Length: 478
Image 1 (cartoon, helix red, strand yellow):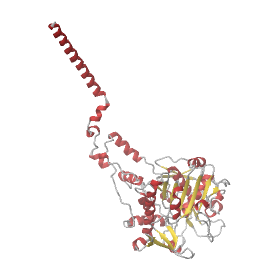
Image 2 (tube, helix red, strand yellow):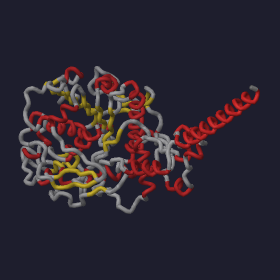
Image 3 (cartoon, helix red, strand yellow):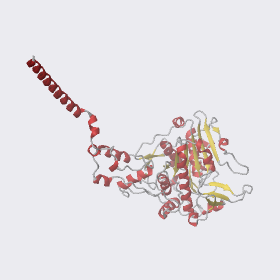
Image 4 (cartoon, one colour):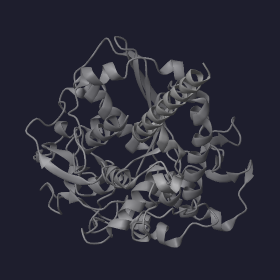
């Protein structure tokens, strides 16, 4: 009995040993195959740290400070003045910037902080390269070329009388050449879909698009109305200006703006005149010739009052920032609710830059409570007075399209003031300066409806014309 018991015990030990060996083998095999094992590796074993060579080639985490009234650089002001006051196209050569500078500028303009790759363990070497490629593919709508298009213009300059001011309807003047109408803008790095009005209105269903700015902003507004109606009179479009207080006041030449609604899609398009983007408050409301407080640090009351009703907001300013306009309108600069005492800030360029930065900062503070709102700041529209200015015999008689070139190759904007103000904010740049600089033949020039001699208008554009392209760029980015 005792021997049998011993043999049984030995058999059990052998069985247990064999079972343990089999289980161990299975566990080792499973450990190698199971991805969970990877989670126990150290981060430096799982994610290879990029080499120093790669880091040197990566975009730097540049933190350029926002230029305000106190630190605005003279170079920026000089560059902007060149754009506004000269007929020379500020088109950058292909070999000017290095690839690294271009990449850094794209990241800065996007408002997104560059990735610090050395401290991003969620990327391996393959993904790092993919990310760099994606950044290079960010669309720059302002970089591209003008190409002929027999489908242009987008509407008839003869028939869009309901929305288009007669002084800008060049088809109604004695102008003999309209070849400027037959071109469209083609961005290099992305496709810009063709405009189709029914599709546009469906996309903008139950939405409001607001333009706030000077007469060039009014041109863009009228252009979009002509585009959205096909340039035809439309009795169904409703005038809803009263909803926004846009009515003609007693003694005024015109109302402060216009607002129209397309009832089928409940789409509203409006314009409000604010040439400086400052809040303008008469110092004595009972006196029609009173001075007007020009609050540089306060956006227009209209914008503040109706911002919650806007879904798309397009701002612009620029050409009224000169001493003649400010004095002629009796505008007196105010800051912090009282007359400005800072002589440096009172300089026109500095006052303009201070205002632009103030408006953009205010908008940025409002966007969290208006998540549906998309904001754009259009860059300055170039003037093309040659051999003088508007009051000294300057003219723009060229009728040959693209005589100064057809392509924009630069990465950054020609309007360095707007570009700097928007850097790091959620307001997008609507960059039209360089591409419009190539189109000096598209201005109203000396032609009028009456055919009488008049001064040359080398600031405003014929419609149909260049502002139609501004709207195509806008719609592509909404």
